[in-house]
Picture 1: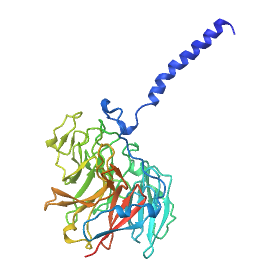
Picture 2: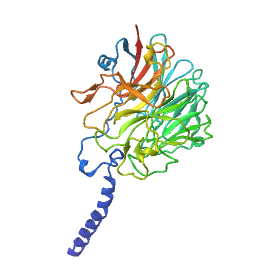
Picture 3: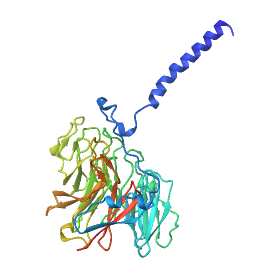
Picture 4: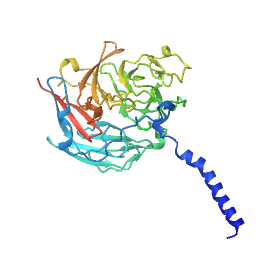
Length: 403
């Protein structure tokens, strides 16, 4: 090779390297969960805790760690459900369980004291939302809405595709859904914000929506709810209450996660400007916090409250009847971990304020700043017992009370 040819080859390689540097820099963009992280926290070790997606043997599930008020007892109701999250109960008693990253929907059938579990659907994109009405199971993933008709009589039913009818946003960040049928017979679900904190289309994200069961009749029930993955209607009032997860990277103590009352359809609840009427986001000062309704209850900073249900049974003592039970998945964006439990919220008479009290504890090891389980959802059973799903252990606990 001549000296000139060698020079040409070297220059070509240098130019190629120069051109690829920006591309490599783009590929090294921070992950979605780090969006909004201050520069001074760039080296922070805080990051989301990856869920365990393999079956935990029953003998390794930390049942003995669970602490409850006097008279209550926890038992292992089902296991071998990696990633178990939101729950709904079919008309035949089958409990359907949604998941996120493992992409499955489970069916858990009680067969006279023992439970059998099968995978009903798999390879879906975060099929977190499950709801049952008129014998049909609705499964809501990030990018699909499926209906399994006559699911109790036909457990291998092929789903009816309803995705186009619902036309939901499909962004992955906070894209997983909670779903439930309301007293009005309509299907309600959340649409989270596609970022940590940002400017976004407020008619498309940070919403709670309702639809007719066929996907028509879309209505906005609540704006400015950053990421609700659990809601229920207060018995006797049919007023909707929803949990809400606040933003990350704003400090160990702020903002607090919240419980909201959606007293009027379409009401704005603060995000991205405020956490309810309690905390002003320094990066979004366009509106005052006094413009928004106050949260019903403050649920702690970064505790990640998800599933919540009002207790409608009679097994538990009178003091618990009508309370909201809230599963707090637990913090990641906090140096000292918090949550990893179930709390109750006792509302005042008009439902505008709530008192938070501990209920299920013990899965957070405060001495080691570590956790043994992650409660995700709660479900009141016909006999008055309470099911609690644990994503980390792929388990469902049954809480009972005996005088």
